[in-house]
Length: 146
Image (cartoon, rainbow, N blue to C red; front, side, top):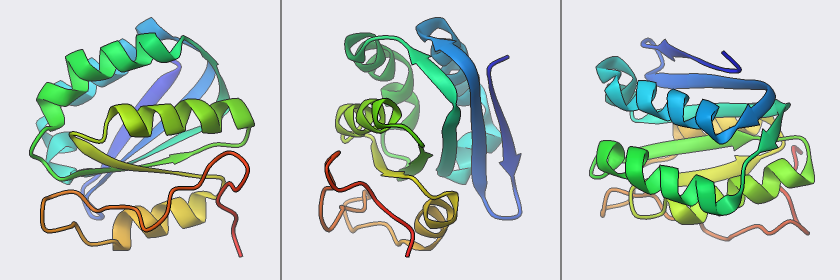
């Protein structure tokens, strides 16, 4: 399977790795498995590493699947996700996902797995259940490790 994940119960985090070509059906399979995994859902936090994958789906496909699969599973769970990327296309698609998922998740995109892990583990949820980003970073100013 091009998308795999593990639950780190000690840290309370789901760690997913996306490898190779990823068509939308692989995303559907992964999100469906995640939505049915009570241990993973109980974590409330995830890191998805997309650095070794090639995304092969449209933004509209991603939006529809997020709405159909993830929104019902994650709404009200204070879900927080960090996405790690290495290429501009991965960054752009991940930012699209962040917008699509704002109603049920707090997502941020990073080029550094160290910063992604730090953010997802350290930040506190906002009073309404979703932490808000202090500033949105566009493709011209991607997050960098200092």
